[in-house]
Image (cartoon, rainbow, N blue to C red):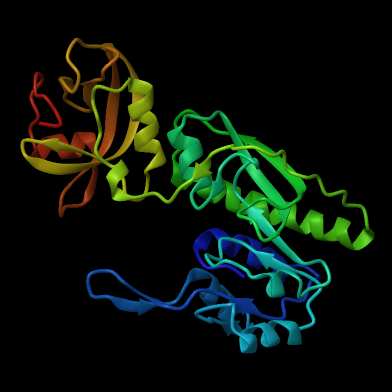
Length: 304
């Protein structure tokens, strides 16, 4: 059970293994883009290419869908970014229950956007937890945890790709150990460890009064959607990539250098180098290319 491209590596590894993927469940097709073209989820495309039957019920709570799931007599139901709440009847419909690949070090970052929030918060480490699902939200027993460092310039998009592959590899190990009876589930600690709420466009505007590190993390964390944004000469500009600069300045939001890169002062007096930008309605460009067609003199204040 999965929907977006994050779930594809796990599905593909299962297909390529000695396990039998008897069915795939995914969210319904959705209209995408300006022309609202009905588009299938990435998991559905992967499954159909492998000749696997795909089901896209609107809910898992009706008896017919639950009966269908039971009819496969599955040993395990693998859930990766499916996007639906699984009722008790589904959780208990396979020998080993429902096993979730979650992209955080649980219990930290339960919820919808663990990868983005790890980057937004400037974490130096994250990972994947393979979890036995229960009726709570990412609260089930942990079957395995694998950790990885987050590079200071790594974006959510980059980390997304790495964790998707890491999760697929770790799942195969867990399935093998489950079959051998070698897994010892570990209960998650109780308490409030934070919730990784959905990412929205409300997070996009850059507040140049924040520190250089906070703004750099915002730019990294919101890549590739919805992207950090600022206003330059009254125009909305997406900021796709940045680096921490060795330059300093005095006024938050002030451009201190604008030749081959756009260097901007942040609230703590440190600067960031903006390396990729996108003017509203235009293509994404390197700063050098952007500045050749859109002059931003030193002294300009961004965000006004």
